Length: 139
Image 1 (cartoon, rainbow, N blue to C red):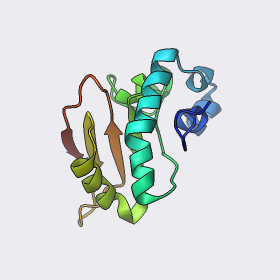
Image 2: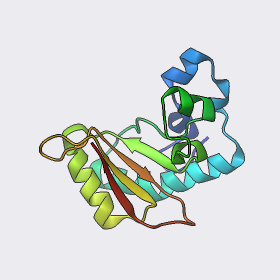
Image 3: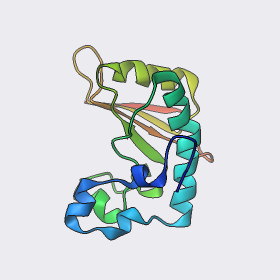
């Protein structure tokens, strides 16, 4: 199922951990979560793709059991389909700063930055009812 021009539901629900643990619900989110993922694809992923080129998100939707298995926050935006993690390698700081200055979002997290400030990955969440542009760094 296409969520936007370049992103589909299959890649935003992909999880080797869920597959290995038999969490089949991971691959069949409810209609509300699918709608939220579509908004993330259109408002976060597509603009990032237009700026940085093709990429595959490392994590997006997580069913509750998967979120618990990977030790995600109990109230994680991933469980609601509002969040995506992206890893562009050495361009992660550039990605983080570009999102901060160019997109509307709910939360932007610089995840485990190195000494130069380049994060291991960038977390972005998008809830159209709460675009507060909250910025965090996890060290």
